Amino acid sequence: MSIIWSDQAGLRLKAGGKSLEYAAWGPEPSAAPTIVLLHEGLGSVAQWRDFPQQLVDATGFGVLAYSRAGYGASDSIELPRPLDYMTREATGTVKEVLDTAGIQQAVLLGHSDGATIAAIYAGSVSDMRIRALVLMAPHFFTEPIGIAAIKAAGDAYANGDLKQKLSKYHADVDVAFQGWYGAWTDPAFESWNVADAIDHLRIPVLAIQGRDDPYGTLAQIQEIETRIYSPIETAILDGCRHAPQQDQPHATLEAIREFCARLDRMEREVVKTA
Figure 1 (cartoon, rainbow, N blue to C red):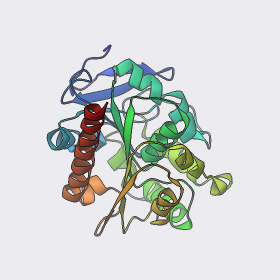
Figure 2 (figure 1 turned 180 degrees about the horizontal axis):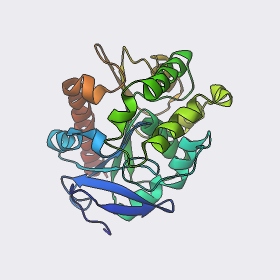
Figure 3 (figure 1 turned 135 degrees about the vertical axis):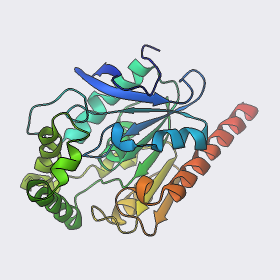
Figure 4 (figure 1 turned 30 degrees about the horizontal axis):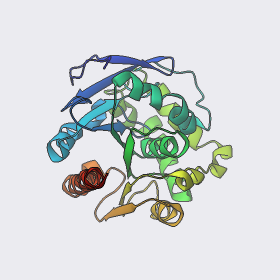
């Protein structure tokens, strides 16, 4: 392992030609599987709050989180973001992060953009370290409801207090916000669709979706269920909007805990019969 395994502030790793902030919790990769957190389109390491430690306590796995370039304290980027920025992140940076961190067995846990990146990576990159996916509020195609919510966020950023709230977490808040907002509101993005990544998944998937998510509907989850060839579990949460780990933390953690426990049981059974 070539990084310091700690949740102390200021840690950085190199991937994708950028210096990225990261933090780690729980057992090191040599001692247990690692849950790798991939944040939402306006997220960062700090915005996971106490969720990483809760995951350690619930599963016994280690946890690694990093801020993608243009977010948090990671290196900035040039705007505009390309419209295929999630695919580029999945195919160009994720593997380097895993390699640099010395990850041996991983569950990729993504939220929103991060969930999409996780699915694209697992569906397009041959990496035997990836045992499973946990996808929270994933999106594989655009929906009018999501575009409307993003435009509303743009208004809140320009005229409300959203910029002030986000500035606590991002060294260059305008790059973080405009990179995301600019891509999603580009007219050419309306035809964006990466659902074909689902066709190539061959590992278990847990999909978690809030029933009241303003950024996407259950059609995203139904797309996974229709297309996937590997085992799929779903948790549709009432009273939950776009962030299950914040809106329904107990139900979210319990679903993840049970999913990871089943993974361990299945792996032990495979070892017994080998």
